[in-house]
Amino acid sequence: MPEATGGPQRTLIVLADGIQAAFAAGAVAELGRAGVRWDAAWGAGLGAQVAVLAVLGEWEEAARRWRRQGELGCPLLQSRIAVLQERFADRDGVLVLPDPFTLDGWLDPDVLDEHLAPERADLPGRLRDAGASARAALADLEAGSSEWVALESVGAADAGALLTAAATFAAGWGPRRTSTDGADRLLLGGVGALPVGAPVGGFGRSCDLVCGFPVPAVARPGLTGALLEAVQRRDEGRAAALVAGWVDAARLLAPTPAAYRYWAARANADLGVEWPLPTERNGELAGLLVEFGAAVARAALESGR
Image (cartoon, rainbow, N blue to C red; front, side):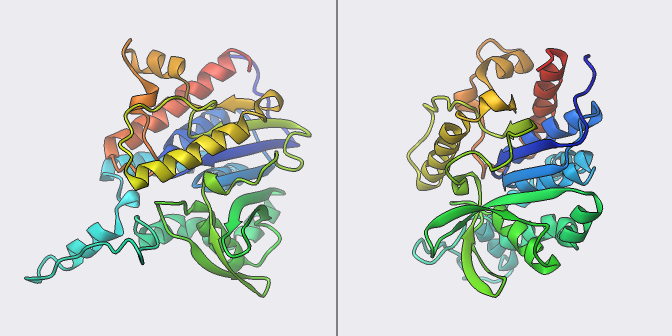
């Protein structure tokens, strides 16, 4: 394996929603184990958490948590309807049904808060102590705009709220009403919140770009047209189109059909059919995605990319 390419002035960009962050966590952890180091993080979706942990020197922690999700059956992606059904299971005659006109998200927000609790604690202070910066992609739904928000330059409570908002995504966790710098905003994150154009300063130095979705996008012939699938597929495709213009300036780690067939050791392994959309709740799959991400990163390091 060639010598690791870490050191100062290296950037990590991680873009992934929901369970696709398991792939990103595995890839980043493998780079970290090989000696790659970063001081600047850019992230979208739960990929923002992976990127933050990496610049804090805790690249193995995100992979460990996703492996744990696999062991537990992926409770992070439990729907809020399922949570309510369990809560009222002992009450005869109570039927819990979603109202599509008022439901702000499919997944349970309390579980997300618990998952991000360790990173929410004094995040700006920890970033400054590490000499690192971190930015998250966020869409202001009321203003109709998207931007990269610096997490190290706001208060501790604000940074935690912004990191949580960044993890939300359409058809997953609903938008968060967040007050930062005296402004009250309705924020939605995920890869669908990526601003148009490359991250400012992201490619002025060595850069690792890790995506939990294929770049370029692959055909997904198995989609049903269900609204949850359609929204996630749209955001994934838009993000892949944006990222396609960045790859010449960065080392790209993303699932590809060829890499997936090789790793799965099946000639009929079809990434377009088998790759999960973000809200898929499959414990076994979460652990497998971590390992696949690590395998893609190893291959990149061994090839000198």
